[in-house]
Length: 160
View (cartoon, rainbow, N blue to C red):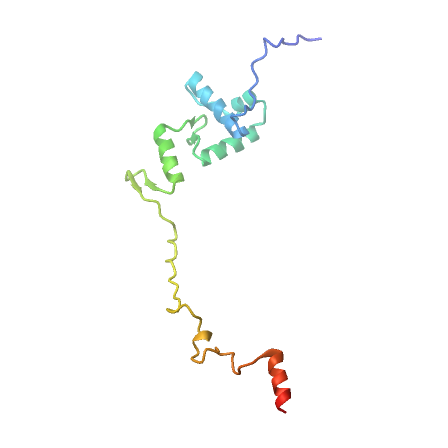
């Protein structure tokens, strides 16, 4: 009975595109566009309304984006901000294993923590033969007689 809005009256609904692999990227795109248009940060409710989802889902996505440093968040409401090129460069260096101290403005070469164990040195016999083969008589430690197996049994039977 009420007036149904025509497709032209409806705001364009945001949807995932092939370049956006997750809901997180949809939230990031919304925040980026909102900051560009309004010059201020959107609230969780505004993001949820714009993406037609719950505030809880938005909150989890924002927390994940902040953790991955794709989005910056201050201590006050509406304090979302996009990282600068400097922040993106620091994030890339840290991702490559460099130690970045922004306060001291230093970058250290990548190291492992804890340090890797030193490589072991393998020692091999000089002549390439095993210890058993170097027993002196060429028989090795296990050798004893000139014959073994069935031949040895046959020769013992013939001598008894």
